[in-house]
Length: 453
Image 1 (cartoon, rainbow, N blue to C red):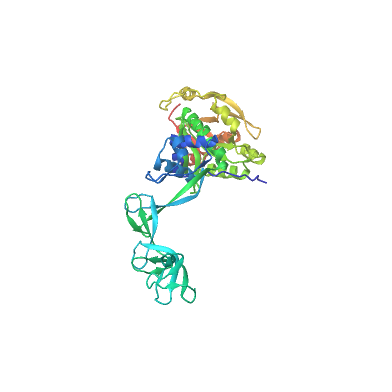
Image 2 (image 1 turned 90 degrees about the horizontal axis):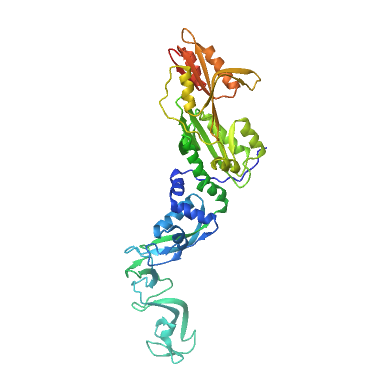
């Protein structure tokens, strides 16, 4: 049974990925989080700034101000590197865009701001209604309109409870009309006119630690390693499979040796526990459908036993943290400098010399034992160990008086398959029939049809 793994799913948005990898300030900020020097990023109010708040720890760690600091935190949140949570909401003035506003209560009848809140008393005799303070005189209740003393509640007067009263139009009301006074430009605006800004605090997501530590160091070095070996590297590559499905590959590396174009499908699986079989199956299916037989899988922290057996059976090169470190620190076989020149040859010896210049070890008329136990004779076998993967090219050479048929190509393909060699070149003198060419193309055999050799 496949082992369950708690997989960290990095975002596959190339734009978001670039923000993290290409921006040195973002990398520096994430490095501070990984080192434990920053755990939480909380805003601090500062109404003198454009935003009305700042992120002091971001400004100090990444030397960024205002919107730039906010943009970096939002980019990290978009990729789930940090979790964001609600901190507060600010009101923005529509006139000057300032965020330092205070609310003020207004009369819903006349709009005046000259309102007071308090216990409302009503004098039965003259029907005067006012705030309790208006009735208070020398420790007694005296009606401000008729000057009669109010002695007994329920007989002389009653209390309507705590309400608002407008001093301009004498309206008594329960809920005032709220307006906002901007303390920057003094504008007085209604609640419908103001804008709202939600501000957030951010906290580092510890579950992303393994992935981030890989992204910020080993991955960059690994990509550089591939480039030093002559590969063109595409990250988050989209590949159309033979089934018609479009697949996403973490890294796609290609190098044209002239004789063969090598394509590496590289998957990256990072979790907090062992990587299970399901992730390996998914990667293998994508590579197979894409027609890529050179497969490399980087796993952190390690593979489960069942997944390891499957990877070995499917010829998937697995790089766990220790393997990757050995590869990148140079303790693996170093890259051999190759000579880039146009691919052309007129003889078998010239072909062999060309392959040697590309860094291959070339053997002629060599025997290879197949998985069936049979021993096969290869006209030319070219081998190149790059540390990360070993390329083997089987070269078959056939001569005849006329274009050769299917059986010659089939026999060569059968030998290469049994020997576990997937990069195949067939030199046909003077050429192949149409049927043989179609078979070679379907089997991924590069055919070099020449008039003589």
